[in-house]
Amino acid sequence: MIVTLTMNPALDKSTRTLTVTPEDKLRCETLQVEPGGGGVNVSRAIHNLGGESLMLYTAGGMSGQEFEMLLQAQGLPNQRIPIAGNTRESFTVFEESSRHQYRFNMPGPTLAEAEWRQVLELLAALPQPDYLVASGSLPPGVPDDFYALVAGQMAGTKTRVVIDTSGRALRTLVQHPAPVYLIKPNLAELAELAGEDLNDDEEIVNAAQRIVDESGIQQIVVSLGAGGVIVVDDQRAARQRTPTVPIRSKIGAGDSTVAGIVLGLARGLPGAEAIRFGVAAGAAAVMTPGSELCRRADAERLFDLMQRNHVLEYL
Ligand SMILES: Nc1ncnc2c1ncn2[C@@H]1O[C@H](COP(=O)(O)OP(=O)(O)OP(=O)(O)O)[C@@H](O)[C@H]1O
Ligand SMILES: [Mg+2]
Image (cartoon, rainbow, N blue to C red; front, side):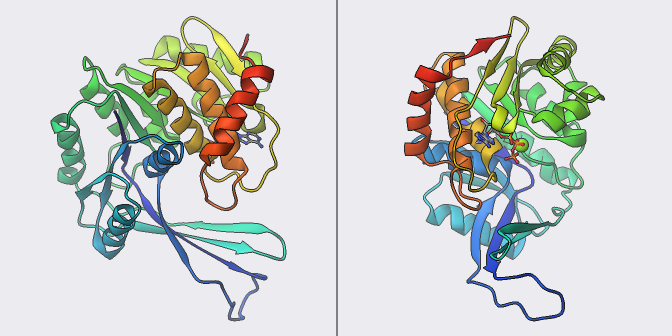
């Protein structure tokens, strides 16, 4: 059983136009509206891959209501933690002439202490999942150590906590002794954590190993875009390369990677194979246009291909 947590979801609105120019009225295609945000995307990718998860998310206002309705309509198991503020919206315009994507992101609503504490209470009251995936940014009002509080609360239960975030939320997590099963920073996020540029595999492995030694984090999966991932725990470091795929849109690659790893583990795959399934799902997400996440057929085909041509290399 997998539960995902999204503290700062967004109603993702997107459209297309020929060219973005100032002053003119731009003729745009019909607006597409999708529920998004870290954990919600992970749950949707798990669903695409043929798995199941429950998504928990905070939502409020008219946009929050629309968000919940869209999840219901898509048949995705979800539980909303109501908040007073309005769920944020994000806006993406695809410029057809240049094939550029313009992405506008708004801050989330400010949460009151009683609201974010309610999330912790709900987590304590739910049946314990095998995996809890907390992903994305923290909205204003939520303390930087929120993910550490979540991990601390799960300590001593069977739940393995997986966290994918950045900035202060990630730094605070690393400074905290709370047990976390896995984090998935990309290279820039790991470099920010390490406080230095990371120029080669050795520097990446050393930085990740230091974090594993000094924090409650058991395993770090560093995602490197077309370079696949480097996995580090207290025993070993290894690299999983990704096959070359046609690139349509990189949006959703990170979330699909996390989805593949966690679904693989939840299905009982050995660690190395779950990592391979995650990298296959990430590469599959790159093959789909716009904000579309991974497709199952692509992920499974790449997973099989990798079994033959891209074995895990110990570093
Ligand atoms: N060009 C690519 N070709 C093949 N696989 C890719 C490519 N880009 C990304 N991937 C796969 O997706 C994974 C995640 O990508 P990336 O490192 O860009 O994550 P991220 O920066 O967290 O992304 P996001 O913006 O979605 O948060 C990579 O580790 C890799 O497996
Ligand atoms: Mg990411």
